[in-house]
Each structure stands twice: as C-alpha cells, then as structure tokens.
Amino acid sequence: MNAVGLQTEIPEILAPGEGAIVPMPDVTMVFKARSGLGPTDFVVAEFTVEPGFAGPGPHVHRGHEELMYILEGTFEVFLEDQTVRLEAGAFVRVPPGVLHDIRNLGSTPARWLGIVSPGGMERYVAEVGDLAVSGELTEESRRQLRLRYDTEEPGVIPPGHWSARS
Image 1 (cartoon, helix red, strand yellow):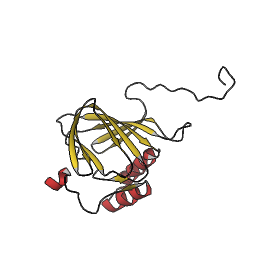
Image 2 (cartoon, rainbow, N blue to C red):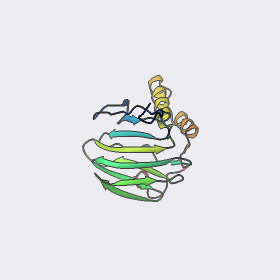
Image 3 (cartoon, one colour):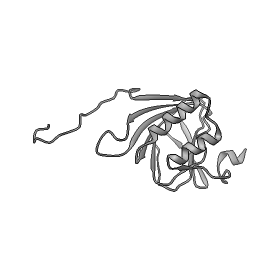
C-alpha cells in the first residue's frame, strides 16, 4: 500500500546488462520490462547484434508498434521501400502495417533499445530459442511461429531491401 492506501507495483531498477538475457545466433536480447507484469502492455529490450548481423528479414506487424532507439553502432533500417543509415542517438518508430528490417553495418557489435506494444515479443523469442536448441528451427517453423505472433513476411524480397541488391 502507498501513502494514500492504494495497492502499488514494486519499482524495479536494473543495472547495465541486467534483465532476462536471451542469447541467439548473432543477437543477444536483454529484456528490461516484460509484458503482463503491470498495468501497461509493452516489452522493453536491449538488443546487441554482432558485426555483419543481416537482420531478421523484412517483416510486418499487423497490430504491434515497434520503437527503436540506437544506442551504439551504425545500422541500416529498411522501411517499406527505402533504407536509411542510422547511428547512435537516432530513433525509429515503426507503426503497425509497415514493412521493416534492421542490420548492423559496422565492424563491431552494435546496440539498440527496442520497445514493442502490445507486449508478447518475449514469448516469441523464447519459442524461437526452443526451436533452435531442439534443431527444429527451419524457415517454415519460423514463418509459422511469426504468424502466431502477429508477424508476416513478404512472399518476395521487396525492392529497396539490401538482400534484393545482392
């Protein structure tokens, strides 16, 4: 109970590097706030990606908004049909329905802080990790999993995406 007798949440403070850590190939995610733990519905995660990280692939969330704040490094972000080079301090808002992707252009690890609303991304990441550990992570199993978590992939690589230039 707080000073006026209302039930309150317990504040949480996480030091650098603290949180639920999920390592994956070329990416480490540290979840700072997970969905379902309070009155709001969002996920906050710090992403560290290795040099040469080519991104998760172009995808669109039909009902989720994604925010990215570049903490360190140089990224290329794909939005609909264009790519933009971004460095530390840059911010990207990806509304629902916008095709997007992100990759590390630098020769060192790079980081961004991501916020997704509504929440649930942490469950998707856990399931991807489980499939990878069991050896069952395939293009098709990943596609099916993404569909369960409000994420669609285009049937063909869109013009303007870096993999279309290769």
